[in-house]
Amino acid sequence: MKLCAVQLASRKGDLPGNLDRHLRCIEQAAALGADLVVFPELSLTGYEPTLARQVALPINSARLEPLQALCDRLNICIAVGLPLPTPAGIQIGMPILRPRQPPLAYAKQRLHADELAFFAAGDQPLVFAAGQLQVAPAICYESMFMAHAADARARGAQLYLVSVAKTAKGIREGYEHYPQVARNLSIPVLMANCVGPADNFVGAGGSAAWGSQGQLLAALGERDEGMIVLDTLASCAIGVPLDAPAA
Image: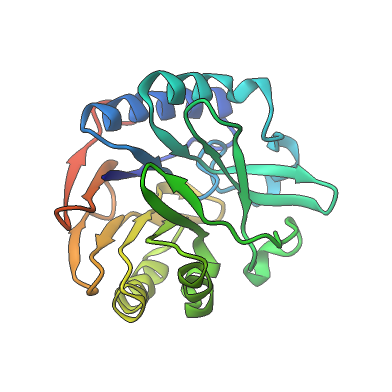
């Protein structure tokens, strides 16, 4: 099975423009043989906590229909980033779209201190099927706690799918932590980070894949948009540039 992590520069609050670029990235991923594609944290709106309430959309919003239509046409699973309104408050969400199935909504369960003023934490772990593979999503800060990955592994996860918006410091810490997750739990890790301006920092790229023994299989640079394509059967990965980089 092939899985793709997209390293993208999202435009602040520009859901229509970001959605269009997501669709083109998904087309490219499918052409590379991907069965699942994951984007960075809050990728459809950019990681912009101060705008989250204004740009939040429910999982069944008609504005997400183009993603579901492409998912159905290409027979591909799609995991994107979007603020989700809930009775508990706005959550850092990961809508997961599957071919000809109802969408799933995962929400970040452990928030960073500076997110607490803008978001409510999710409280539902998730492991979902993508083809024959059981996949556990994780969103940024929570993915830095071994307990989160260990719980996912105990629930049957065969791959840890990490969506982040990390600074250079955060990526350095991730490059120490994610190999330990892979090695300790015997589970591959695929991580998608953003590049470019986000909130009050700059996304530091470095999207990467690690094999189940903790070995780094492929990584992208700190500035350029691109994709990591992980082949789980061959336990190998490659980095490729986007066909349609940001203008």
